[in-house]
Length: 307
Length: 224
Image (tube, rainbow over all chains, first blue to last red):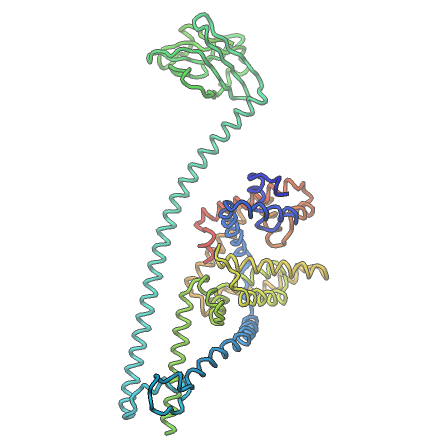
């Protein structure tokens, strides 16, 4: 089935795939597609991470302590043989004089204390007063070390928090920029969508032909509701002191300006989108004239195209 | 002689206590991923630390899905037992938390499906269970007050994001995530065309992603 899946189809199905909401055959098809297209792994992982966060939306409840006790008892009983095995190996090492003593040493081996007893044996055994002092010194040293560890850990967390805050601020700025770009793209998309609607199902189509003033001129004006879309070719560039101006001409009354087209219409191969003024609704014809820079309220120059 | 032996035992005990404390402090500083590495090495305390970090969210998720306290406790233990026995299967391609939540959701949905074969779920029982289990979020031994507060804040953000989805999209997302329904099952339940459900589910997830991102919650970081 995946043979027939396109990239776009897979991208559309991925959210449902991650939620396990596809049918079995669809899941298999996506599995196969993903195996063959490793580039989608990153998108898949992002989706998995995002959907995993939905878990946090469940109403918070605290598990009873007995659940943890039962789990840890089971875990420790399972872990114990493993740890005992390690301890046994350590004990074998510690009680075997051949393994503990350096080769060549002639001193007979004496029974060794258990590992538990070996730790205090490093303390001096001269007098109880010295042991007492050593105990306090060790405790103070331990406390100092712990305090140092806490300070270092706190500083490390503080640094991490600051770094994260900076990164969040950076991401926020990026997000704002991305939102701005997205809005611009949405606007473009809407505009293209409107154009597409006008091209595929226009309300009116008005071909434009050049007049004697510009016999090469050709154009098309499409109307879709309150928007007009103009293609025009063959108009010669004008001096900068002049501009082409678009007119909507009602059956009765004076032409109504639908905007300036600039001095060099031919340089622009794109589609001009114009808003049809409400007072020009039901116009009978479309015309383009040459006007002074800045346009005119009524046509004053020669008409170059008409339809 | 006896006194000397007793002092020696006390001293050993203190040394062991200090070692335990050091070990806990060390584990506390480890990331989830590092704890999983420790679990692979059969370190039970690492599992305990991981449990303290995630059990609340995992249990809440399971309870939301299975809607039964006894069942939720069983599944919770199954989830962490699987982590204990299969930590090596975590491949590090995403966050460990997301991996844990996926295990929890899958196990809870399996439990729910088994249960549905025998009896229907009971909403009243779920509400009772939640009421019993709802507590001010406490800071567990291996979970600092700051981390608890941060997780609560994230949970609020996720809830807010979910709530801000259009109802028709949110319902599809919740039915898929918490009830484990397929798109066609959702279409059947909601009496909607399958295509409509597919669109709503996709748009819902995509919008949720954007909202979470806007709230500063990027997947792997949000679940730390």
